[in-house]
Length: 104
Image (cartoon, rainbow, N blue to C red; front, side):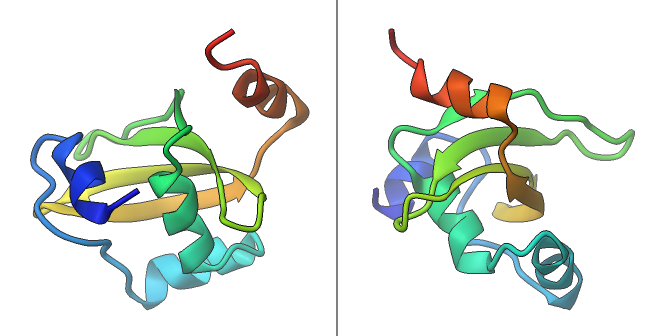
């Protein structure tokens, strides 16, 4: 899916992903690379998932697959018009079933 199409589906998103050492290190603690988190967010078959929010920032989450087929949960926030991945991890068995049953 084209980045622009993804951004058009989220109000307030103007440009690409927001990565720095902090969130790169955090997702790598879960053995996830930034490109994998981006793939999952751009998955045309992604589905929303429950996400926690902090007082200062609403957060969203999706279940999506990477181009290699790895299924991830990605939590993100919109900061200054950019998608900032907060965390990402492999899905649980329950989340995997939910993703596979989407649209049925």
